[in-house]
Image (tube, rainbow, N blue to C red):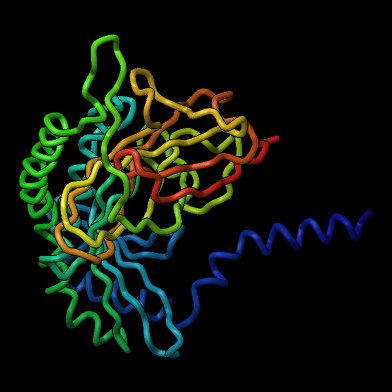
Length: 326
């Protein structure tokens, strides 16, 4: 019995120190150098014990630097992060949240083409970060002021790009409202089938994650899904097209009984997304609007099928498993 108690104690100590083991001496030296440099510049710093980052504020905006040692014994990947932009949450209305999510995806694509920092949408947040590889902490701090200057205007950059993206998204929605024959209602309530017979789209493997009603990830993409951690599912895919243009994508999620899960008022797809592809054969990441509920009994255990359509043409089919949360 004593041996068993000792084993449990040892395991608890190991778990408690996992973060310490992950942060090696090279990373710790880099952390100290960056912290000291920022304090010499007049910033008040703080260490985040969860990820060992150095946090500081400028003009009431939170920034933090993370450290990741690479194969080179002295080389470090330093990443400066900026406070994210929050998008409307799902609890504020799914339609509004999904529209703003769609606009944000277009906006960050524009930012990534124009600026050296990286922008991406994760859940209902737009994140900004500037990764820099440096062979020594001294080399990195020489660049830090310029890196910080680049990220300082990231929210203004995003707001301007979002305004332009809104015009693009609105034009796509208006185009499909006027030209999508699949949505023309005939006398008697029947739908006229879309005449499209093949697709120019190429869609990669579907990655699925789960977010809560604020858009925060519960399970990251390709994580382990259970009935207890599934709320709103989000699908991410890499898409390219041989012909540039406007595409109307639809997602069908089929439950283990092969019945489509659909939102109220939409009998065709589980979720939809209008996509503008500007360059032929250039792969871009697409994140579909989240779909689901906070109801604990909504997602049942079993094998689900996910189908992605270009108008009415099936372009990708994958399966994913939701395990029992018991």
